[in-house]
Image (cartoon, rainbow, N blue to C red; front, side, top):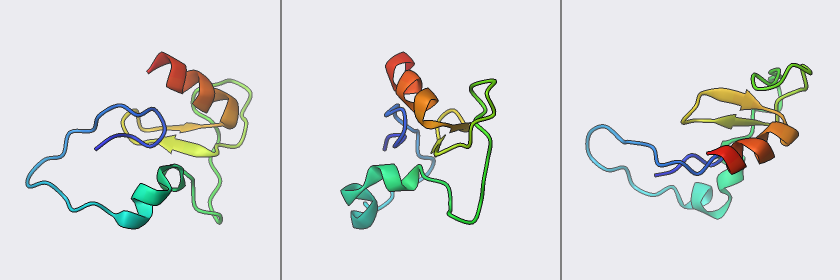
Length: 73
């Protein structure tokens, strides 16, 4: 399994999970915050609204930081 934002592998404790076919069709959807919640980007100092969440790094990221995060990770 991999983080839908940075694509790093995520260790799964215990037995392997079944694939979620809806998530497999749109992995970016898993990294999107819920429409009724807002978070500030934790990676930049501009306090942009976060559009994604990296499961591996546990960081909320704005669009600009997602691109940078993918290049670094």
